[in-house]
Every structure is written in structure tokens, then in C-alpha cells.
Image: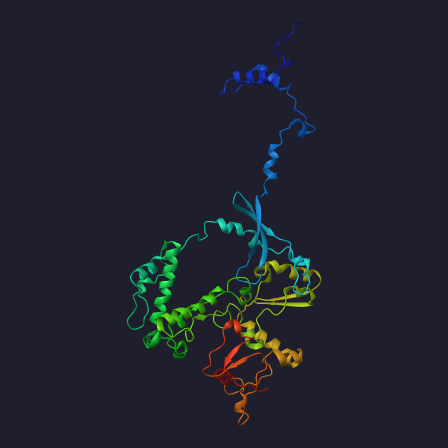
Length: 442
């Protein structure tokens, strides 16, 4: 039998594809030769793909995924006291990723004591995603001003003749559109607004305008007819003054230059603006804590959690708001520490009642450090039953004389000029303020 050149034997792949194409793109049936050839196709077995496929440039896709051109270290310091040192990795001039420095365990204090390496890795999910905020479409990348405020400024800051308040047609916060301005324009607008406010509320006319707006007379009296005292600045939490956002308070002090320009008081009698602290005015932090103890809220380290048998988390979601330090809490639980959470948002009215109940148990069963309570809190001070105020020594003892202060406070005689801030050795209190404080009775 003669050899048939159209049998599957010797049927190459090229010939198979050619024959298949001859069947036509719209044909439902393949040619006899193509069908026969399909049975002769054998899959190729490659034992070593790197040897059979020597081109390995495709590996650069994942090998260079985290490659970078340069790095720099920066401080992530939001409005809290984390202050994490982070590394930014830059490629083609763009920060592509952020990570921890792993250097906290290398830190030492002035005495040479080293920190524990267990603080690392000090970084939270927000820090890891910070690069998205750098280049995100929601970031404000240029100065912008409300259209209404801009119109008010261009009109010369018109005020109500009686109250000094601005025309409400310019005040549409939350509903107004925005205008993009240059940095020079933005700074000029800010300066013009500060000057206008200080001028409007300076002198007796300014005092009358504030009273006409309904402010408490005692609050108005405290301004002393000084327009700059109406300007309010608020920096970050005091602990952050070490690293950054404390400049608002320095700017408040610098408003004394504006006061001297407006009232002509001279440098020695010029008054700056008001700085709103985080407790009494802003209440970003619990005002009761310094009232009772005289100290800020954070008087312990979060790493102390692992030394506690019981942790009472009251009114805070530690894992969410203290993410870099959350591991101390979770690790303490692994060691057997009991954690109790009291969430005020679920039972706002019950929470203070619970606090008073706990305080009652602590007092009844004497579950407190008596020496600490006497020296560091206001608990021993007697309270008047008729007014609810702390009992003054002058109300009990005839011809009582105030005790000498031995806690680093400097008393300033009436009419004396206080020392410059850089020359103060501690808190400076006027004699009139000292008399108003008085001494309490235990």
C-alpha cells in the first residue's frame, strides 16, 4: 500500500493550522485531515521552565514592586501623643509606601537608659496608608477661601453699627462655595481679618459691641477693652509642643505687636491674644482630671498594661484610638490580664452613676492610697453644704493669713511687670489671684 501523505503521520503543527484555516471561519465542520490530525497532538512536557524559557525579564515585574530610589525618615505626629518615626520609600519622586523605622529599641535618654525593643514596630494602619492622603483627590493642595468671606473682605469688612457683627449674607459656612487664591492672597486676608477684629473690639466702643452681642459681662470685662483679647488661638495638646503644633500659642503671644500698633500701649503693656487650652475651653481632654489632681490626663505609660491584673478601659476604644500601642493591651490579655470596658456612648446616664458608686465603695472599704490622696488630689478638702464650694480657711479662722506657697509659684505684686517667658522659673501668679484662690480646709 502506498504511503498516504495526508495521514496523521508526519502531520506538522503548521500544516494542521493551515488545514484548519482552509475549513473557513464560518464552517461548522472541520476537514477530514484536520480532525484526523487532532489525535496526533501531544502536550509538551517541560521539566525546567527556566531552562526551556531563558528570558527572565518578566521577573522584574514583582522583583521591582518594592524597589525604591531613596528613603527619608519623618515624624508622624497627628493630634495625639503617638509621634511615630516612620520611613518613606520614594520612587520616581513619589512616596510609594511607608513603614516603621524599627529604631525605638535603640533610643536612650540622657542617663543612657535604653528603651525596650518591644515598642517596635511603631506604626499604625493610618500611617501605612498615609501616602494615599499625600496624593489623594481629597487633599487640599492650595489655599482656598469661602466666597462669602472673600466678598466680605473685598467690601472692607462691613459691620453692624451696634453689635459689630458681620452682615449675615456673607456668613454661609457649610453652604458657601470656595475660591482658590494664592498664598500671598491667603496670608493677606488672614492679616486683614485679624487687624479688623482687633480694631472692632478695642476700647470702650469694642466693649459695648461685645455686650450688645450678648456675651457675659464678666467675660467682656476680662478683655480689658483690648481687641486682641477677642482673638482666640488653639494649638495642639501640650505634649505635642515638644515636636510641633504649638505655634498657635506663640502666634497668640505675637498679637501683642498688633495691640501696640492699634492702642499705642508700648511694648511693655501690650497684650496678646487668647490661647484656648485643651481642657477648660476646648475640652478635647477631660477637664476634671487636672482639677482633681493638678496633672494632665496621661500620668502613666501604656506599656504598664502588662503589669496590671485588671485594666478598666473607660470611655475610650484603645485599639482604635491608640493603634501603635494597642499591642500592649492585647499582649496583657494573653498573659491573663482581665479587661473591663465601660462605653459611655451606650449608657451615658448610667456611666456617672456607676463612677459615683465605685467611688463610694472605694471610700467605704478604704481601697485607696491615703498618702497619695492627701498629697496629690483635692479629695481631703472640705466642701460647704450650703453652696457646694470648697471651704475657705478665711471663713473659719478669724484674721487668717494666707500661707506661703512652696510649690514653685512666684507671686507677682500688684503693678509689677511679669518676667519674660524665657526668664520664668515656674508659674507666675498675681497677689490678687492668690487672694482669690485662698486656702482650703481639710
